[in-house]
Image 1 (tube, rainbow, N blue to C red):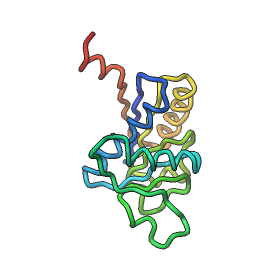
Image 2 (image 1 turned 30 degrees about the horizontal axis):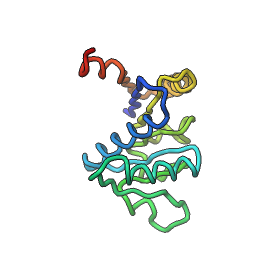
Image 3 (image 1 turned 120 degrees about the vertical axis):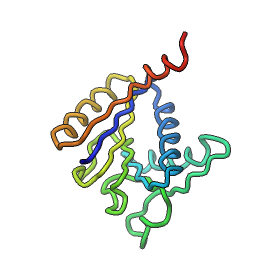
Image 4 (image 1 turned 135 degrees about the horizontal axis):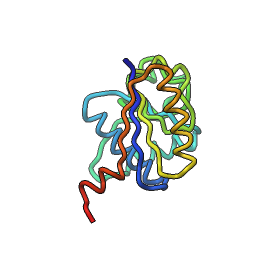
Amino acid sequence: MPEAIFYVLASESETERQHFACRLIEKIYRGGQFCYVLTDSNQQSQQMDDLLWTFRAGSFVPHSVYQQDAPDADEIDDVLINGDPIPNKRRDIVVNLSNHIPQHVERCQKIVEILTSAEASRKMGRQRYRHYQQAGFKITTHNMADKHKQTNPS
C-alpha cells in the first residue's frame, strides 16, 4: 500500500522547512534508499541543490538536479531534485517540496510532505492529504511542535 507521511513544523519559516527537508533527505540516504525531491521551479531546485551541500558541516548527500534529457540521469546520484514528471526509477520515495500533488501519484510508494505552520501551507497540505486519502494511501502525520515540546520541556 502506498504511504504518505506528513511532517507539520512549528515554524512558518520556509528556510526551516528546507533545512528539515535536508535532514530528512540525509536520513533517507544514510538508510540506503534513493529519493526524488519534487520542487515547483528551477530556482527552488537550485536552492535545494545548494543547501544539500551546505546545511550541515560534515554532511555528504550525493545529489544532483535531474536533467530529463541526460542519458541515465536517474542512475547518477542517490538523490535527484527537480519538478514533474518524476523519473520512473525514483518513485519509491518522493519528498514533495512543491505546492501540488505529483503527477501519477498512484505510482509512488512513499510521499513525504513537509508543512510549515503558515495557514497557506496547512491549507495546501489538507488538500493533498484528502487526495492521498482518496487514492488509498496509508497516511501518517507527525506534529513536530508536539515532539519539540516533549523533548524540550519549557
